[in-house]
Length: 394
Image (cartoon, rainbow, N blue to C red):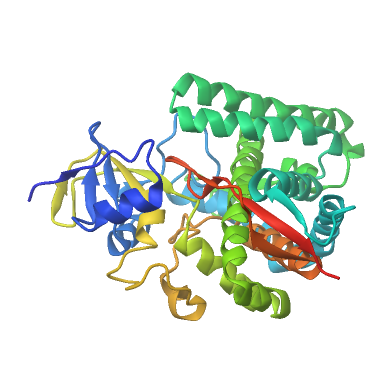
């Protein structure tokens, strides 16, 4: 069977993959990377962690860039930070942050409302403030983090390895600037989540000792964990807010369901809107042995890209990908991945996005803007700029 050649770089992920997926659920880039476009195939790859390794980055990626027992050990040590109890305790703080930001945006706005970019004016600022509050980072980092988000976005779009490496190192430096003072303070370090992470003990099996042993995290591992929790989440939350506000601006009845419904109903709607327009575009894998996927023979050591945006819109699973059906499509939703490497930060992202939407819709209506929006291009999805008009509720 011949393989379609498909290069997603520089293309708007939804349109490009909708067209390509109609030909076949699996394609290959000119550079040789396999691109998994179909839902069934994406699930097969993501749930087969033995034949499709997540250890693909030249940088340490804790926990989801690890495999096997090592991955399981780090997930067991870090997943509790996203427990239901912790999210419940965090919710009032996130609501206060959202309400304060919205008050700033709507201050002195007349009855006609005000146009904002949902991504930069609301999503990015909210993401930075919510994340720094969650981690216990100083508010003075906000301007630096906002600028980093802009630079990271531009580097990702460029596809230039040196440029993306430079912005990654800048973010690591920000993390070290937070970790180092805590290390120096020792027992007097602030009692916040970042300090907790620094104190994590990782259970690892020791073949020479019955049972298991524990060890402290290295500084490199601490930086990696905080980088993966924060660096990716900041941009992702901003893009998600752009997707959500653009959607509700076009569907007032949906906005009312979000405003008046329960947290669970709002979360289901948020997940469904992100399935339709998924800004979490892809994850990488590498084969550990020869495999057959969608009738294609793939050799050991080959690169594989799971294209979540495409898989979530596969007509074989969701006949009308743009139809909003939160309950009907929930079981097929792959926005946060699937399998042992499912996104660990899903509870936090859900909390932030639901709270942002609920707090916004409590004080304002969202209308389409006269200014045209701009779509993102791979490797990023969603909207680069999402203009909407906020009209204060009277």
